[in-house]
Image 1 (cartoon, rainbow, N blue to C red):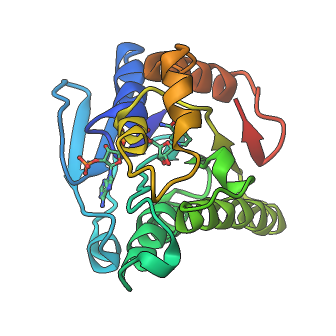
Image 2: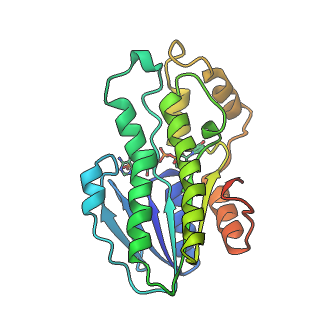
Length: 230
Ligand SMILES: NC(=O)c1ccc[n+]([C@@H]2O[C@H](COP(=O)([O-])OP(=O)(O)OC[C@H]3O[C@@H](n4cnc5c(N)ncnc54)[C@H](OP(=O)(O)O)[C@@H]3O)[C@@H](O)[C@H]2O)c1
């Protein structure tokens, strides 16, 4: 198996990359920054907020019978109401959270040899299924990722291809994204206290635990539907 993961510099993506490497699996990271060094690891530099950079990214991975693409990189900022945002905030969030994953899925499905298996795991969010004020772009970009995944799965079934796609809400994880949420402006984000409490009550999941659970579910067919949660 060959694993490709976006957003590997920290958080869940970093944990997933390290857990797969621990199992002796070949991993390629895609992102703006790299913090991993390992004999079985390669890195492609790409700013996913740039449609052009993703479009021009060369997909030339070693030949394998099985590929796993994990669209993990995500962006939540700015956390405030749409009426108070710059005009390009929505475009940036949708590019990173929705369009870049779609670009990579298209590129991978064109790259994979006919007889290989392609599994795609999109890291979605509970926020794509439950609206929160001041997260409108984030909620909508993840909801779009969910629906894209369902439609793409139907296309691959129609084509008779050996592709599985999942759009996973991983739970609330103790990463920099949560630090940003807790550091947001209370005036601009009315639900902030909920996230402060989750941290105070020690309810955040550890990235490595989430990564291990994801790997287990992927290996043993634990995800029953395209749109799923851990
Ligand atoms: N943490 C949670 O509670 C939670 C809950 C539900 C869903 N999620 C989802 O889980 C995924 C991982 O989140 P996380 O919590 O691990 O977040 P994180 O700690 O903020 O890490 C995000 C990763 O995405 C990368 N990234 C951001 N913008 C990028 C860009 N323009 N180009 C390339 N890479 C970029 C970052 O790398 P650089 O900044 O170094 O480029 C970083 O490696 C996201 O899709 C998030 O929406 C998280």
